[in-house]
Length: 97
Image 1: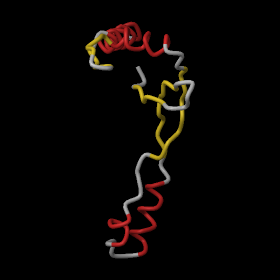
Image 2: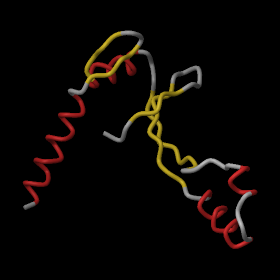
Image 3: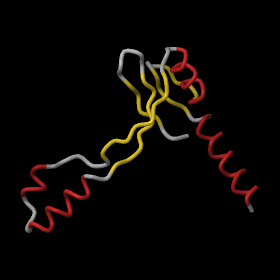
Image 4: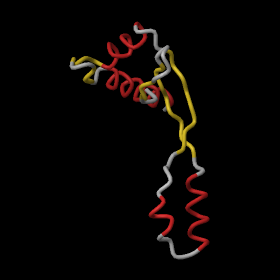
């Protein structure tokens, strides 16, 4: 059973690496794209970022204080962002694969 799961994960990973992406007007495979990013001097970074952004209009239109508190709790949720960071500081978000 474990072998089947690992084989399926490997197949999904290879499918993702063979998918196409448009980079600077060129269509290329994802693995070539990642190699180009590495050749440009980019490094990998994993960062926790907020899952949701604050919407003032939505917050002000809520009917009760409890609803606003639930919204504030929802805003505290974080997600993992995978990035290719350029030496100048700007980054490109990538998928986990």
